[in-house]
Image (cartoon, rainbow, N blue to C red; front, side, top):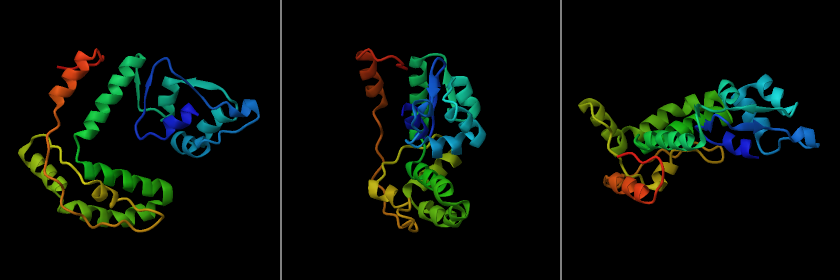
Length: 199
């Protein structure tokens, strides 16, 4: 089940000593937690069947070769640090752009490429006049990092289609920009003895 939870993530980081396995068939069962869909989709038919049908286990380097993980770190602590670093880089991007990217990619994978292509114009149009989009363009023009914009949850949810319906592309104005108190966050982590503090 742990491997199937990993497959549900958008970006995956593993420690070098990790071992993966889908050995249900060696116990008279089958990988019913999603691997017959996600593992096949991510690693390809032959690669997925090689491990699911034999029950053999594999390591982090093989998982990266298969495309199941994107980064391999030397140990577990560094894997967690690297995962947090990647998450922070994602968090620095425009939230509505991230939401729309995921929605568009899910349309292509879950439904069809044709459906995803058909929605691109509407999705772009929905973002075009939001504060999120305008801040991103301004930051690009001034060659500076984009500032975080707080997004109303219902606005972000409006981008993603539900139950096969067309996405509701109407957008409301975003809340005013708020700065995240990163210095206090990292100081609290250091004071609590959490590893991975960066000054």
